[in-house]
Length: 443
Image (cartoon, rainbow, N blue to C red; front, side):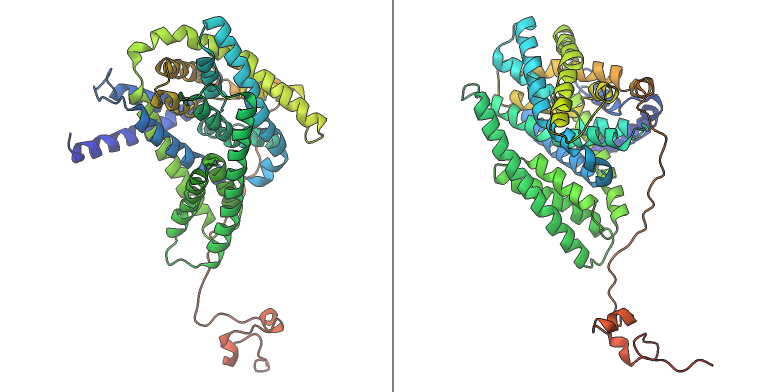
């Protein structure tokens, strides 16, 4: 097909996806299921569009996830998540490790898979999905600390899981030891954090002091800065996902020119990235091979949801409580266990071993695809009922109202008495209307 046909098809798919979001919103299902369905409909089993390039899917998928993470950081309110950061960090590190080990032990023992395959499947499933969490939980009336824990965890846990999956997918080397996992992950996370904590403040300072000629340039500059952090961290062999999330979190919580418009632009870009990502993953899937992955997928998914996730939450909550960083009651822990949604992230991570030609990687991809679809249907719509049943739902809160603001340059800035007192009087000194200059006596 020529370019015009592709453009027409792409526009129709985007419009269909936008219309389907309304249905997903009313039903409580994450939109990813409908987007995946569109991809399957367009694929070999539907309209016959072939797509089997796992390496290209991996590259596009990781780039789309970076954009989704950037939007998540830009739209996250630091005041709401600040108290939840210790718990989220423990869940994103220790909790991820516990989940990987439990799922790997179950898959190796129950399904007879090799240790490398079992560990890959456990690592792929360990990360909660930022897009699914943001789209579902932001509609729920949850207490700020509980919602902040889930949002911050979904933003932080992508980085360590990507590191583990990449290490396990290196077929030229044996399975790394636990110490090697900790060492590699620690170095990459430190580099990513350093880059994010550097690019974020520097970018915020620059945007506050540079008056751009058009308001539409500010959203582009902000997103470009997040990808500067992502690329710089990747070049330095650090975690690009942690860098982009921290940069976006800093920029999103700094008073920037046209901040509201920037967030709106980032949200639209993230929706487009989600649509393209899920449709592409649907194209990559082979429905004819899915029946053989149903039973192993359901076994691994049940272990993940009923054993691994609750255990990771329980141990993480105990650690933060012993460290006196936070305290979660059993109701909050139960909801955190059930609300660990999986979405595009596990499916994208499953393309990494497939692109690296790891033995059995395509089977892992099919199993992960089944797990994401089945357990998203089971968990997503039930979250409001589970929140009310556990008594963790909170009344709706008032939303902040933001007013657009931007630097303003003028050849004759208005003078004020405070400026005069600071000996920085403006060029309007000679004008009779200057506040620093006494005017004519009033009658």
